[in-house]
Image 1 (cartoon, one colour):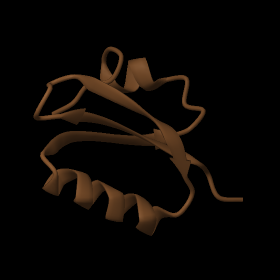
Image 2: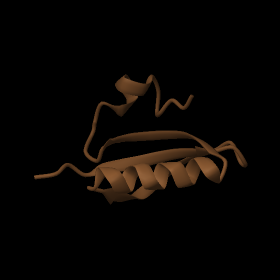
Image 3: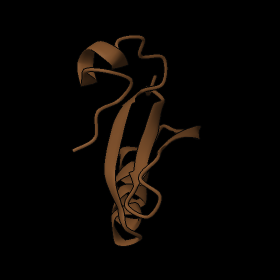
Length: 66
C-alpha cells in the first residue's frame, strides 16, 4: 500500500506558510507539482507522510523552510 504525502509550501510573494489540504500517493505527481510550484515563485516545499506526527522535531519548529 502506497503512503499518502502532504506538501507544505511557503510563498516568495507573501512570505507566509501555507499548509495544503491535499494528499498525494504518486511520487511522480509530487515532483510535477513541486516543479510547478518552484516556477511560480514558491521556494520552500516540505513533503512528508500525511500522518507524520514528528514534523516539528524533523523540521525544528512547525515546519522549517530553506
